[in-house]
Amino acid sequence: MPEKYLETKIRHESQSVWILINRPEKLNTITVRIADEIIMALDECSQDREVRAVVLSGVGENFSAGADINQFNGISTDAAIAFHRKLNDLVLKLRSFPKPVIALLHGYALGGGLEISESADFRIATETCTLGQPEVDIGINAGAGGNVVLPRLIGYGKAMYLALTGSKITAAKALEMGLVDAVVPDSSAESFVRELIGKISEKPYDTVSTIKDVMVSSMNSGVPAGLEYEATAFGRLLSTEETRKRISGFISKHSHDSRAPRHQ
Image (cartoon, rainbow, N blue to C red):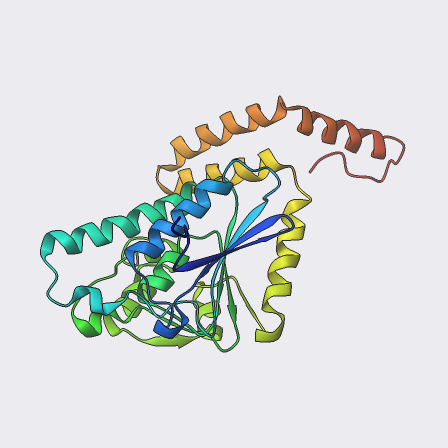
């Protein structure tokens, strides 16, 4: 029976699943197979309430140096569009996934590799990480949302600068631009991510999932529609047993302390 995962490795940890791009000899460059395997791994754990977060990273020294350019030599227009649409499927899956997705970036995080991470919920970079969208240097545009998602992350001007110059930047510069959410020493990167997962895991499962859903949905709608959806989600959560128990516990804990806050 053929193996399910040939170009990724799946690591199950307490409260999390780690999906690791596994082509270290090719700098973890992205193929259609990798996109399919990541989607499959996400589907397998999407309804598992023991899994509170997913980590996306790479085996070896690099997260991903981008798409495997060998795929593009002589490729037809239709095949090129089909390849991009497969990466579209992946980034849309990451955005709609009901749990937080944390991209742990190290080594090279370039091109399509970086762009996939832009649809994660958190990007944590090691101090020695190099980031960029250098596709312009070979005459193509972004392959996984780097012209669409990146401006929503860091603003139009900064995104245009990265896309048109192909500049490679340091993790510190990426943090300054808002492209990553934290920069950590290489030696403690995984422990930092596990600590983050631990904090998330203390929160109610359905509330975490709802917050992600509302935030992602609001990015694709106007403010009035987003606020209405947020109100609906608020009402739905207040009717759940977990939320009612937490509110009751909060009131009970602070009912005899006049200095305690009565609100959140």
